[in-house]
Length: 492
Image (tube, rainbow, N blue to C red; front, side, top):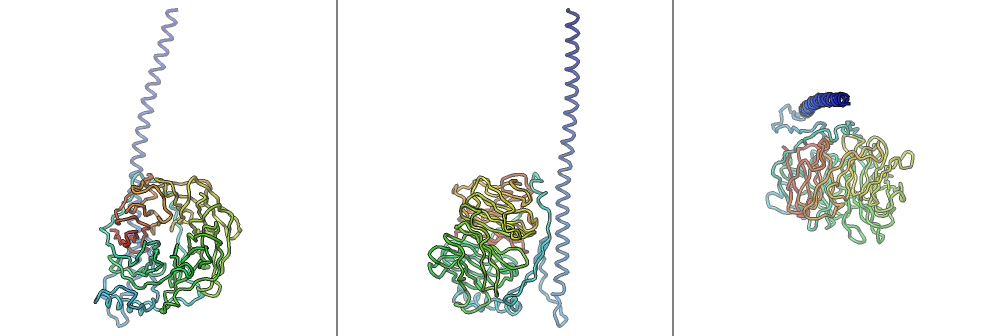
């Protein structure tokens, strides 16, 4: 018995030793593979950086080739002005529009500076020429799709955006700002709107170092003198569209024609009133060849507007009024197909296919949805702003239902309430997102960063930031704040 017990003990000891040796061997294998993963991860990040640098160099070269003929004047002499080199992978070319002759009373007077700005505007108008005539279609810009979804959460470190000290200019609004929008056809122009009912048109100066006020228009609604809830540029760039409220029989949609000089002729209010109650929260032009825009309202409705006989005549069509059970807070169009995405306070995300006349995409999350913005490069990727603290931004793939790709967020210092007035914006390359906050801070997120936190945060204003928009071609961020200032933040 003793001998048998000893043999069993010896066998167990041998098995234990063998298992220990096997564990040590496999632990070395794991360490070796981890080392290789770390090495190849760093190699991948370096290769990505080299690829991006090469793409930037190619973009610079293409811009130089495009600008070279413009630097030769008709008399054969060369223009002595320095060439503008814009660091963008796919640069957006500016198409100037003709602006109205603005009365000097609508612009703050600053002595000689006022005369200089007026001269700059006159020269700008002479160079710009007329916009396209009413009713003509714009030359449709077919953007190139780039698969960015595979890059989501692919890096352990973010790409940092280097911003110079910002320049702040008074917004010339008397009440809190509400909207900021950049012109789609002229990279020098942007507009702001505020609770005072005014829409201010600005021109960027000195490659983004400053901006001058070109004109001011009173866009308050006719009946109740409400301010514009949201604004959108017409794709031609010559007019702006504003939305209001459906309560009390007030005006729902107005168009501001920037090429008309007489004040009474500049703002036209639509007679059609398809929304039945509440605020019209969102307006967005669709990224399709046939020009149309979509509005979303507190009456749960999503309405499509198409041109009838020119920019001042539009026909509304209710796409749906029962797919949302609460206010529609945001609308957007997908580039690759005629689909209108709407998000609501009912926590629903609806993708309505215009060709089939039904919802092709349905998703519901645990939080109220405040806005939706498609990615400018990856046509399947879109972002939804939610009301959940530290999880405010969600990324989705329109091809995948009930699937969230990633989420970002921040902790607010001043308040826990999540406002629909804090608007997100994509960078032109589609890799970065900016967001305002209830704090005086711009948060920047890198979709490649495998963290939920901001890749960086910039102290930009004295009070809450409503929006920070990326310029189409200049290395510039433009922000608006409740401190009544416009921030110009140069990216270096």
